[in-house]
Amino acid sequence: MDSPIAVIGGNGRVGRLVVEKLLARGERVRVLGRSERGSRHRSEAEFFRADVREPATLTAPLAGCSAVVYSVEPGTSDSGSDSPRATMYQGVLNALEAATAGGARPHFALVSQIYVTRPENSMNSYGRLLDWRLAGEDAVRAAGLPHTVVRPSWLTDRHAAGSAVRLEQGDTGDGKICRDDVAEAIVNALYLPAGAGITFEIYNGSGSAGTDWSRLFGGLRRDEAPAAAR
Ligand SMILES: NC(=O)c1ccc[n+]([C@@H]2O[C@H](COP(=O)([O-])OP(=O)(O)OC[C@H]3O[C@@H](n4cnc5c(N)ncnc54)[C@H](OP(=O)(O)O)[C@@H]3O)[C@@H](O)[C@H]2O)c1
Image 1: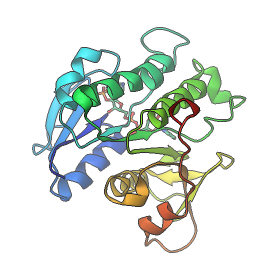
Image 2: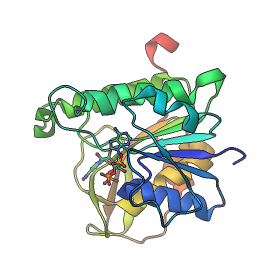
Image 3: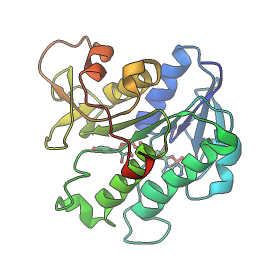
């Protein structure tokens, strides 16, 4: 791509894999996080100290980017700066605003999770984590940008549940997904036309490893424009 790609949470476990895959494709990558710790081995990526809860820290690193990947771990307090509302909703709004300054229209890829439409799940007792994640997703879908919302199932570092990849919609499933497959899904979604305008859950399962992302994305239902934007 002509312009840099920003990875918010690019020092995290999924984020780091996304950064490595983008660098391997020859992209210019900006890593955003609260601390530079852990990013030294990727000297080709430019690190920016940024906190999604502090809008001013996002302005420079998100300016002029062709794509933004948001892979941020939520806090679990009921309220305040360490709450899911601050990181999964307000933080997403802050990133959208910074990324679209001056009329820019980057591809925005959000890492969410399964269960977001199942508020009765026990994870929602952590600061209404699921409700705020869904509100963040809705903000991304309503922004009018090329977007991808990825809902990983339980993350693993190895293929603990088979090496085939299955995408679902409707948020009814349960299972596991390897972080490397999540990163691969995000990166492919930035390049493939069928990867824009979709929300999906992602799982590993038994079967062969080779993944045809174009076919997987192409088989999904496109997100509907939110009522206000129709
Ligand atoms: N664990 C699971 O089974 C599971 C399942 C589904 C979805 N997910 C979600 O998948 C995503 C990626 O997971 P992961 O395992 O890669 O997480 P991770 O290793 O904990 O990485 C999360 C990143 O978020 C960054 N971050 C946290 N607060 C921030 C803030 N206020 N501003 C900017 N950056 C911030 C951290 O960097 P700094 O500390 O340097 O700021 C870190 O690099 C997360 O959203 C996670 O909740 C997890």
